[in-house]
Image 1 (cartoon, rainbow, N blue to C red):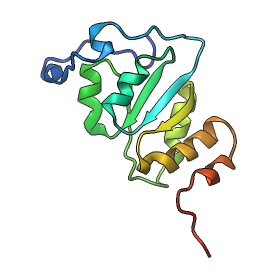
Image 2 (image 1 turned 180 degrees about the vertical axis):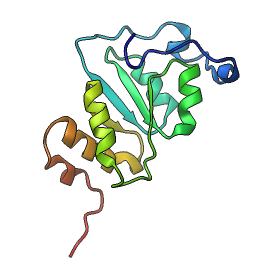
Image 3 (image 1 turned 90 degrees about the horizontal axis):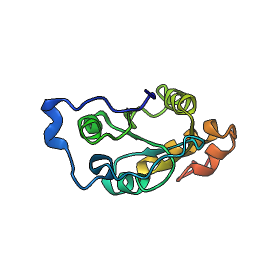
Image 4 (image 1 turned 135 degrees about the vertical axis):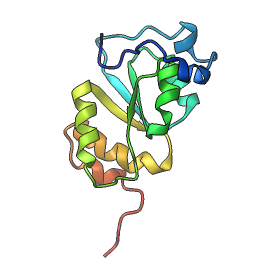
Length: 139
């Protein structure tokens, strides 16, 4: 069993099951184990549906309130509080790198700088972070 394979669904979260998701219908595109993961930063059911059509493995990185939905729908999930900026920020980048994630994709504006910081670690390019800042500070 891989690190992100789903366990049997608990009865208390079965109400979260979404029959329109490929992961529930059993029609998710087969994933190529030779390709790394993509990490979706934030929450968007439409982005998850799109990721299920790709041949790359994926993981959703979102606040912990998304955990039950992800578990009920066989969606790989890592909980993360994006408001913890600079408080153990390297932790999520290291966790994703250890998992085999190649790239982090921001799903909304609040995760753009996170994706820059994470991608700079994933790709071993520290200067990339500076290019992801939306509003640089002027001195």
